[in-house]
Amino acid sequence: MFELKGAFGKRIVGVMGARAEVQNVDATLKILSAIDEKTHTVSQIFNAGRIAGKKHLIHSARLALDAQATCTGFAGSLNIELVCWASGLRQIAHAFGRVGLNRDCKQVAILTIGKTREAVKRTQAKILQELCVKRDDQVIDITLKKIPVLMKTFSILKPELKIADVQKLVLEKVALLSLQR
Image (cartoon, rainbow, N blue to C red; front, top):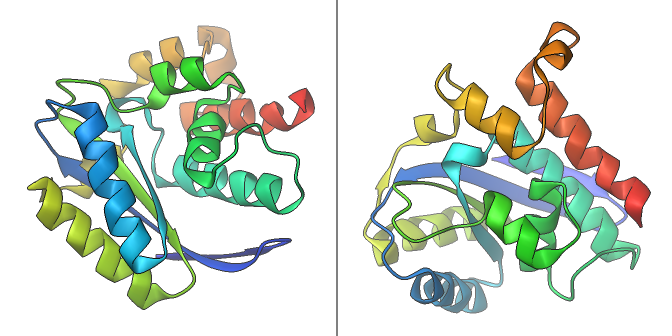
């Protein structure tokens, strides 16, 4: 778990990966929403194949929280704001297409934001239980197989990899979204 501080105050962020058989995206998102409502947290689920490690989601969470706290965000809810920042896109439909959960997704990344470690831990345990998924944080890691997918997803060119690794380039693309406000 990670502690973030900013204009939004202090928040705890939990990131986990899981192996899943997603058949119904809407039903999965409704389960997350119901859990969040009970635990007073905010959770979002992503296609882990398009996430450049835990740093990608933590960076996106910080930017989304800052945007919401300063009323400079793109979406009406933090859940949607998280997808926009993680994707580096302000258009919501395109953002979900880039990093959001899709049908038949086999590997997912789950991000939860709360005010206490206990709330985030409780929420994430409940999510694993309710979605009947097996936790596997390695699905978030960047692998050699994942690099070409990330390059295509975030429009990273081969010459750019001579300057920085793929994770740093994705973080830069995400941060550049703040210039589009």
